[in-house]
Length: 67
View 1: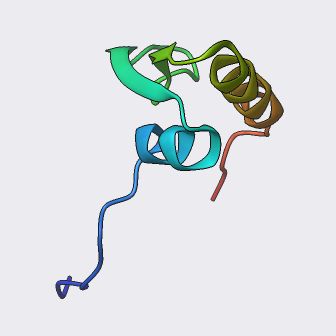
View 2: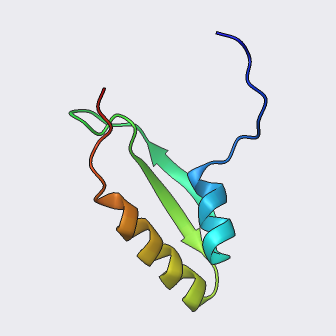
């Protein structure tokens, strides 16, 4: 596979950019369909944390990717 130029942009980056809150990876992994799951610790002002919670809840119910 040839290398592709670009910049890594993670869920942690997205939370920070979209809400202004800070985010840290607390745990990751899983079994039985949760292999790519993760837990984030979010910090910031009350409105930033609430915005992050709303954002994360909005994407948490998306269906799993299938080939």
